Length: 136
Image 1: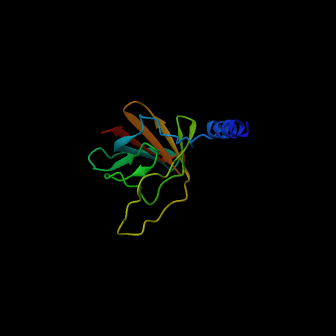
Image 2: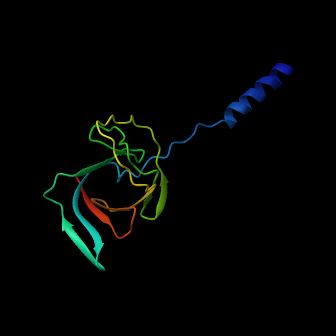
Image 3: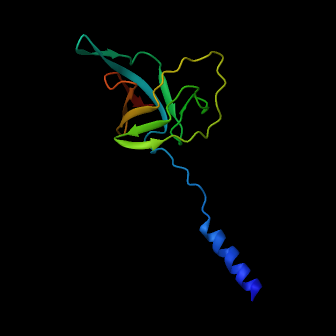
């Protein structure tokens, strides 16, 4: 009887344990994005600069991390994303990149992301400064 109760207790404990669920970023965010324009406030007016001729890209992993083209986590990146108003906590799962220079990071723990199927607008540190990207 004790053996049966012990087995039942162990079985119940095992069922009660659950793995930590890892939150993944929305599929629409994951991948390569090309910078096409920037907006900033200057003298009370919004100034837009075309960046489509530049080859500036940003990449996101399935965990929401900002990564390089090899999928390694960038040194400076946010801790949280606000994607279309929804709060997302970034999971640091990718291998960190080894960068040959010391980056100076702005203290912006949350990036605002307006995510559309093939277009994304990032607001980093200030809602007046926006960067627009298209899916590559």
